[in-house]
Length: 148
Image (cartoon, rainbow, N blue to C red; front, top):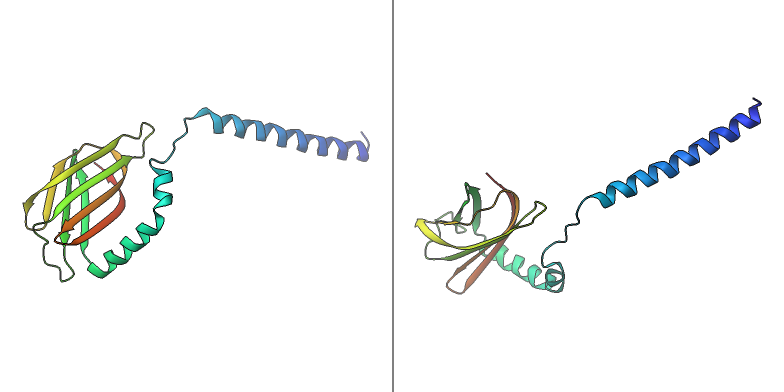
């Protein structure tokens, strides 16, 4: 085989390999189910509202922690000074990141000073929104957490 023929064979081999790799990537990309983010359009429309809410959150400076253990969500809230926040209305809404993307929601009941709980279910990673209302103040905290 001459040097010119060898180079032509190498170039053709690389092109065929590229076409095969592209075909494999296309097949893999279409083999799984698609996952559309819930309420994507509504969240995009209200993005400015979220920016305003974040400014209110910074002004309030409440400290929020959340966990989900065995389907029970626990939220602890403290004010700017670190004092447990009592007498608040706390709600959670979330969506599991798994393929079936189940939603969870619930109103939490106070269990002790600054702590609120409810059974909501959920497993795996969850995108969670916590809404806290007390007096005329509203604090909205969004996070992703792993339900255990």
